[in-house]
Length: 253
Figure (tube, rainbow, N blue to C red):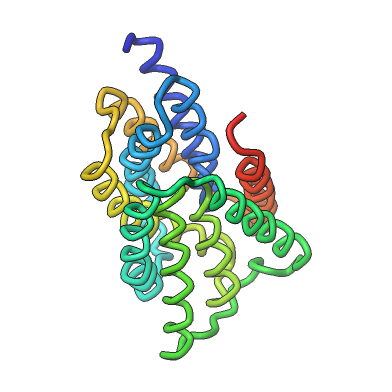
């Protein structure tokens, strides 16, 4: 691959991961289709994307740690509950046609956009709830299911985590995005990348440019998220979920 293509991959990764870090998910919407367009078959593109997106979590974590607004209990719950689902999903998708799953996930993703839009006050203010043992148990079960979707498909599953944290635990959008980026970006994407790279091929020659772009994009997106208000993040979240949902329903263009 020449320098022009490496530069293109770097810039693509910056844009994709900036949007993902700001909205709480959706890097696969931009990055994965472009990897396929550049010549990689779907399994190879998915495995390569999974490995590269770990850097999104690293870049976002580096910025969010400076703000001291991460909730360790929530982070631990997301990782512990979701990682087994991520591994199971990654193993599952290697042997199963993904189109029907994409359609189902697309419909669910569209429902996220509509739900948030028709709940104008949702996620604008913190309202801590469901912090009992039963509340954490229900939260963990749903995160396990979302983790499975994250492992099987790489198109916006972090968006489900963000809204679940807002809806179930009463986080505002800014805080929910921070938890999602750190726990999903590092814990889920890391486990998914390890599983995928062990079971499928990875285009390693593309990884340095993608990782560098993911680091930069993740950091810049996290910084933008911190500077933005909850209403701005909420509207961007709704836009990204709408686009991701439509893209999943339409399939490869």
